[in-house]
Image (cartoon, rainbow, N blue to C red; front, side):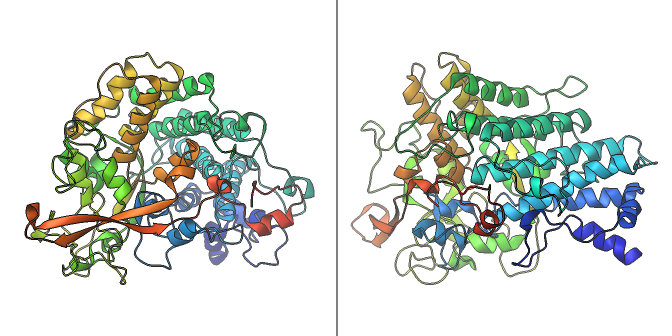
Amino acid sequence: MKRNILLSIFLFSALALLPHCKKGFLDRAATTQQQDSDIFTSFAMTDQVVNNLYSKMRGTYTYLGGYNMASATDEAKDASSWMGSMRFNNGSWSGNDNPIGNTWRDNYVAIRQANTILENVVKFNTPDDANNPGTLEIRIGEVYYLRAYFLWELMRQFGGVIIFTKPVEQTDEVELNKPRNTYDECVAQVLADCDEAFKRVRFAYDPNTEVGRVTKGACLALKARVLLFSASPLWANAGKTGYLADIAPGSMASDPAKWKRAADAAKAVIDLKDAGGNTVYALEPTLAARQDMFKSKTLQSKEVIFVRMREANQDYDRYIFPKGYGGWSGCAPAQELVDDYEMSNGLPIEDPLSGYDETMPYTNRDPRFYTDILYNGANWKGRQVETYATGRDKQSTETDHTRTGYFNRKLADEAITPGQSGSRFIHGINYRLAEMYLSYAEALNESEPANPDVLTYVNLIRTRAGQQPLPAGLSQADMRKRIQNERRIELCFENHRFWDVRRWKIAEATQKEMWGMRPIVDNTAPGGFRYERFKVEDRLWRNAMYVIPITTDETLRNPNLKQNEGW
């Protein structure tokens, strides 16, 4: 019996993985009524099942098969051709090959597990934790949140999907062959589950024993993110009545009422107060503190709302470290991203008044540039980075060399030496307050552009970074452009850009090519180098790529499951 119980915990509600399996993502592993009773009549066993559900969340920074999604965007470039980002960039992905993985299956497996937990805690009258009364109700709240999270993951990739709120038996042909719900019906389901979770979970937990659990802030943050996407051009109108995205070129639909809901949801996170009346979240006060938030102080930061615990270890540092420092040079920033860092006077480099000098391209830039990007001549671990042809960190197409002439500094820990003793756990930040500030400003600019909060909340982030504030009096269109760029800079490498360029419907312009920078030794040039831009690659884009194709096998199993347009 003990062996069966343990199998139930880890295989419970799992997918039958064999390709000939008829029911696919909703198949349930063979558990019996007795095994369910053994689990759900024990708080300790139920607690383990809930904890296992957390493990099904994807890592924020390692979302793409263990690597960073930035390299599937105009943020960065990976250094190895076998990495999943390459297939996104050369267009060799399809319903039979989603570089992220079989996420249709994975998320529905998790949703079924959540549904089974919610059903069985009622069916078997699961007892509370005798030592900590009220804990069972908290765990139920966590499951509601996680069910919403996994549904959101499906929506973010595929659009409107099938909503399941009860376990489905293999013999139930009607449920198994349901059509897709509209996008906005899925939005409503996520919001409802977040509300149920919010009622039950806490503002915070014991930092020594329960850090990383779902909080009230996490519930509100997920709502804010979902509503922001719902209001964005890809879904603003299309999501109201259908499950397919608006992938028509140049179509920029907008709905002020949706933007207003998104603004209110983001502001609810910003203004959240605990039971004692204290504001729950706060921006880290300095740029240095912001950087510590990504390294050693993630779990202590007041800016962090929710994390994927222990997402990675120092192997991630090896992935993004320069070759000359023992790394693989992955997630190398693109010249396009570098160019979008403003000058220290707050002006874009293309502005004639900015002071940008092509002969000294890394001088007087936004202070975040120096904390986020490693470039030729940057100081790192006791020496200068050398990306010139004979340098230790040279730009090259050789294995484990930067393809662009840059490296990711933002998420790398300078205290780590890959391959040597010592370790660290990387806790991926799912939501942080800076994202909510930018979401609030964006949504408010679309629904109420004259509201002074638009400028205020963008400038709070810029001021924290030591960057000049945006000027007053920008038009709605100009503010939209500046907010989009602020998200690009502040949130780079945090798994936002891939989705942002899609929801804004600008990917058809941003995903066409990538450039890098090659330093050439020249003693007559400032600093001893002249800099030459070069094209790293051309990329394939078609508008069907605004959404991910559903796994082909699933569309064959369910005759009512329609594939996304263009796939």
